[in-house]
Image 1: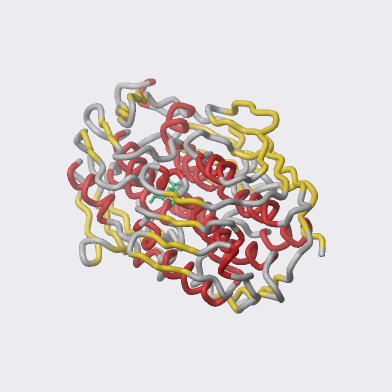
Image 2: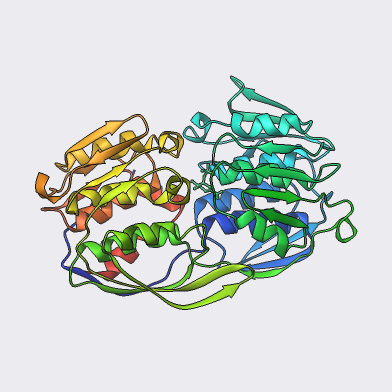
Length: 435
Ligand code: S3P
C-alpha cells in the first residue's frame, strides 16, 4: 500500500474545490434509482463509498451512466428494482449498507449485502431491529454483522424511537417507510443530519417534521405512487472541507477560500465549535440549492483555544471529531471529547486510532471508553512520525494536517485509504501548502 510523506508547511493559500457531499450523493443516487425516468446528479461525489452505492444500484437494475462530473441514473419506479444475482458489495461504506437495507426490506425479493473487513465488523443490529419490526425477514452474522440476507416484503408502518442518534438508522427506516402500509415515524434522541428528509421531498415523497420526529408517507397513495426523476446539484462536502479549515487555522499566515461547500445547519456545528475556539472562518455568498444550503468559506490562520465537546453536539460533528482531536496539541488548553463511544464503531475504532497515532507524534493523550483528552501546546510540540491510519480515510487525513505543523516529516502508511471520501486529498493539500 502506498505511503505518503508530509513535510511541514509555512502556510496554506488559494482556493479549494471539494468532492460532492458523500451523504447527499448516496441519497440522491438511491432515490433516483427508485424514481421513474432519468435523473442527472451534477457534482456527484468522487468518493469510493458513493461509487459502491452506484455499483449496488446497477446490480439491482438501475441504468447508470457516469460522466465527467455528473451521474445519470434511470429508474423504473419504486417497484422497478430487480433481484441481483450476486451479493451486493457495499465495500467500506456504512451508509450504503444501512440505507440500502431499508430500501431492500421493502422489495418483494431477496438480497444479500456484504462489505469489506472493516464494514463486516460494524454493528448492523441497529437497522435490523426496526426493519424486522416493520415485517422484513433479515438474517445477519451473529445477528449483528454483515453479510446480511434481506427477504423483503410489503412492510408495516411503525413509530420508531431510535435508541442511538444515527442519521443512517433514521434514513433506513424512512426509506423502508416508502414501502409500508401507512405513515412511518422516526424519533431521534438527538438531532442528526437531515439530508434524507430533504432529498425525499426533492424527489416528491411526502415528509412531515415536528421537532425530532419525522413522518414519511408510503409511496402508494402519494403522487400516484411515484417518485419524480430530478436534475440536482450536489454541494461540496463540509466533512472534507474540515481538513483544509483545520490546516489553514493551524498555520498563522494562511488564507484560503473554500468554494461551493454544503452548509446545511445539521452539518455546520463543527464551524461553531472551531470558531468558538478562535478560528477565523467567514461564510460568504450563502444560497439555497434543492433544500440544501451552499456557500463559500474564507479561512485564515488563528490561535486556537481548545475546549470540551460533548452531549448533543457529538452526533452533529461525528465525522469531524478525528480532525478536531488531531488539532488538540496545537491549542492552548487541549481538547476533550466526551459521550462519543460511537467513534469506536466507525470505519476504524477512531478513539484508539487517534490515541495511538497522537502518541506516536509525542502528544499527551488520555483514552477513555467514550472519548479522549488530548493536552494542548504546553505538553510540547508534535514531531513527525509514522502514522498507521488503520485503513480509515479520516484518520489518514487528520494526521496529514497535523503533520503540516509538526517538526520533521511524517509518513502516512496505507495512504490510498483516502479514496473512500476524497481521492485527490493529498494533491489538493500539496497544491495549497507553501513550504
Ligand atoms: C452518515 C451518518 C453518520 C456519519 C457517516 C455518514 C450518513 O453515521 O458518521 O459518515 O450519511 O447518514 P451514523 O448515522 O451512523 O452516525
